[in-house]
Image (cartoon, rainbow, N blue to C red; front, side, top):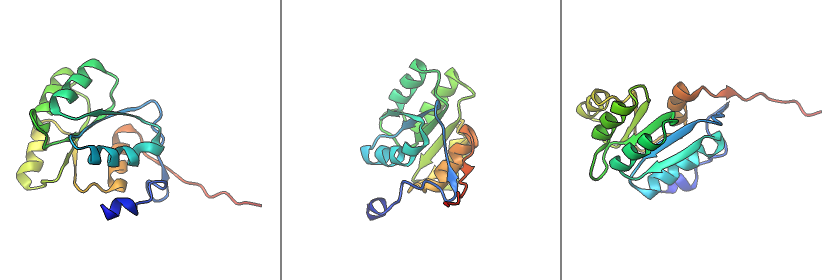
Amino acid sequence: MNDLMFTNFNNPAPGKIYNWKGKIILIAEDTDCSFLYLKTILRNTEATVLWASSGQEAINTVRENRNIDVVLMDINMPGINGFDATIAIHSMMPDLPVIAQTAYVHDNEVQLCFASGCTDYISKPIDKHLLLEKLGAVLGPGVLKTLTKIS
């Protein structure tokens, strides 16, 4: 938790600015703390962030909102897990990118992520720079900051 307290969220990635205005990111995450961490990382991107606190809620959210651009899917959730939720989401929207987020990065778990249809995965604890790069592959890469000379 101390890492979160000392994390500078105003500079999301060294040398890059991300602008995803008009993009919708669904965060499927069952813990408030993890959701708020992800939302804080994304706050300067201008993306719209939706939250589903269970696999079933993620499925329902995708069913009701076909404009979602990417899903960040926690794998270990109560009820319907992230694997099954991803399969159900892809039955409705087969091309919707799903990035698995998991604390368990054993080879078998990573294989299960891809087998369920996830396009990528990120391990917890989530590195904000890596997350933005992975989302950038789907939503559009960050642009390099330009230094302006003050006269």
